[in-house]
Image (tube, rainbow, N blue to C red; front, side, top):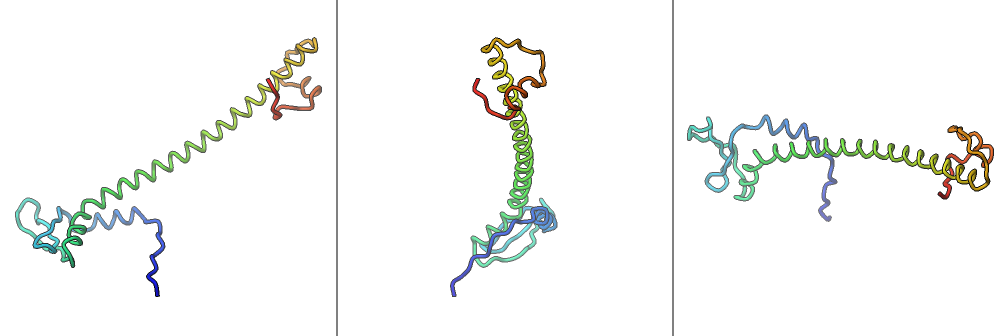
Length: 147
């Protein structure tokens, strides 16, 4: 039977950070190749063994994770917050763009109306509600007219 990789799931960063915060405090380091150690109390020169790893590489990984993981998790939390903010900003700008395009359509329609009035010698009314235009051209506020 082939080894199946587990499906990646989204991590709970707050829970991961809580785990980091309750772990043994201090600067973890490797002694004697595989012994993960912390100086306790800090600056005293006394060390306590936290655990052992099966290889030098694993021991180094575990020791570095004590300070590296909280930093990486904090950066991930900040990146997710920024992504949420940017998604909201994009939604706002998209709605704003839609409104600008709607207003542009109205301006194009009015420009078309004024051009037709001038072309046909019709007196241009002071009617910004487009009522004469709507009667003459069947609405048109959302149609795209050539300028």
